[in-house]
Length: 458
Image 1 (tube, helix red, strand yellow):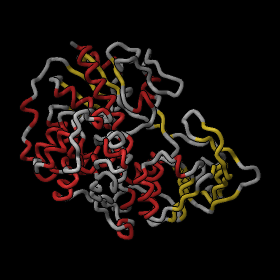
Image 2 (cartoon, one colour):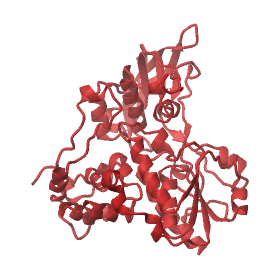
Image 3 (cartoon, rainbow, N blue to C red):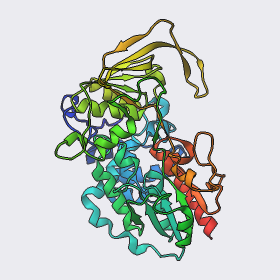
Image 4 (tube, rainbow, N blue to C red):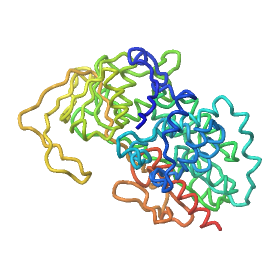
């Protein structure tokens, strides 16, 4: 049995000094070798494991034959953000998890092959032509609110169906979490920009600096002639622990910290006018991909970083690849540890993080073993900055200013089986209906919602 082709990566000693991509991607020879491992199964279990329904064996076969352009076109029949998904999608839990070769723990590296195919567009975009010429304009107008992965996907799919789509983004550039939440070394902004250029070429009109709920209400969008509205504003409201000291200076939410660096380039101050007040020793609280992003960004800023997580490594929701990268970059892991208080100095700045040791008990509602405090095990971590990365929930702004828009107890927007909200003609999908989840899950929901919107209008 042939082994997987390893994806080249920057050496840890070098990459810790820069924000360039860690994974360097396959060469043509490596991509064809990896593609040749595919068994071309008739049942195609990998397709069933893909939230956006890519014909995976078909595009891999094209890569094996050296048809990179055709492979990308095959992917784009279903996925409008392949270069993004090839980098940040957790394939190991989805398509690769059900790959027949995974029975021997060596599934096809579908993510690396998708990235290889997608990166063709970075250097050969002119060969793919102007896509919008093939789109037949439909008189029906659809508004998409939010330009993250769900909004971009729904907008692109509706444009391909012939609708006149306007995508509204509250920030000054489109991309949502793809630009403000994911670091450059995992997802370069050039990649996101290129994907958005493709979606714009489908005929999607993108309006930035437009906050729906303030600039326009949903009612006003309907008055402007939109026949349906898709809400894809994500989950951008940070969650905190509710412990003493969270109001001290140098306590950040993951959202603010990452947005300052990723979107506002605080790492290049004063070249860019965005200050970032952090000390020399940083504690990042959490165990997901966002927590690891915060830790690895902090390390690249030259800081000593400890990641504090209340369970063990086995229970961490972060991707195994990202955990490995963080270890190589000398992030300190403090497992089975729960913060109980942030300590401050006389000037109101962080000077320490008081924690308590934990042990694992019976499983909780998430299926993971519940962390239980160990009596009299309190200790203090000597840190001067704390970043809280324990999750996000939907921002309540839109629901507060929109009469009749029903939400659930966790502030997510309530939808029916067709993604329609309590307001006729208003649909929603992605993190706004599930809470914080993966990019690909949001995209999968958006594709299904686009079909539902099409059926509703017709």
